[in-house]
Structure formats: structure tokens, C-alpha cells
Image 1 (cartoon, helix red, strand yellow):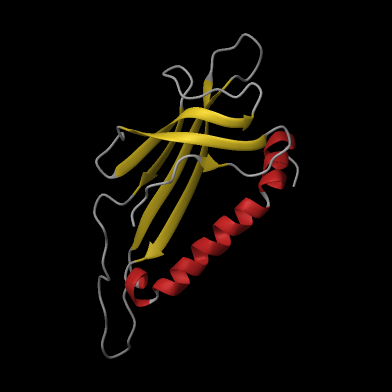
Image 2 (cartoon, helix red, strand yellow):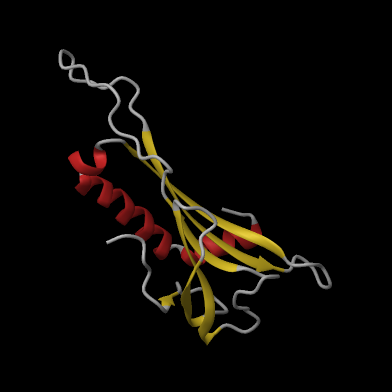
Length: 155
């Protein structure tokens, strides 16, 4: 299955957002190697949160490499590859935010980059899955702490 988030997406529990959900609608991606969705409706209690608009975007996009890399060189004598390339994937969430009263909306970004050595996606797929499971599980579990750090600048 490719990147195709089910809608609505249930947001993580964070103070000030009660049972947040985000209805996603397919959008035109900015490039051929991307898929994009915009937030067309909100659920739960999210006082002051806005949905997507031209002036205040709220989008979720995923990018894959324009050209997928493969194992470049395998030395059958040593069994090692020479400078194996990586395939880089990105998930980018954009949200229009207002920095101070009366100011114009600016775009805040959350970018997740996933770099997988070419060949690992097939030879060691289960460990690539474990990487992503741990990363997104930890992010989900610590969403409140990450939110606090983004708001206060303290770890």
C-alpha cells in the first residue's frame, strides 16, 4: 500500500486539543514524485485552529526520490558495497500560523526525512519497518513533550 492516509486522521493527545481529528482531501501535489492532502475539516475541540486555505495552508505531503537508487557496486570478493546510495523519503506537514497579533500568516513546517540504504528495502525490510515503527511510535508517545519543547525551547 502506498501513502494514502485514511481520513479523518486522529491527532495525538496534546493539551488544548480534545479528541482532535483532521479530515483529509486529496490535493494536487507540487511535484510528480509527491502526493498531497489538505485538511478540509476539523473534529473534536480545537478552538482557534483553522482548516486549509490559500492564505493559511494546512497540508500533508509525502515525497519519494525522483529516481529510486539501487545497490551501486557489490564486490563479490569482500562482500561489501562501495558507497551504497540511500533513497530519501519526506513527509512534510505545513500549517499556517500567526506569529503575533495583526501579523500576516506564516507557514510552520514539520519535516520527517527517512533515509534507507538502497537494497535494504527488500533484503532487510523487517528492520526498515522496525525503524519506522519505533520512530513514529516514539513520536506519537511523546507528542505532548515535543509540543512543549517547540513552545518553550527547552528539552
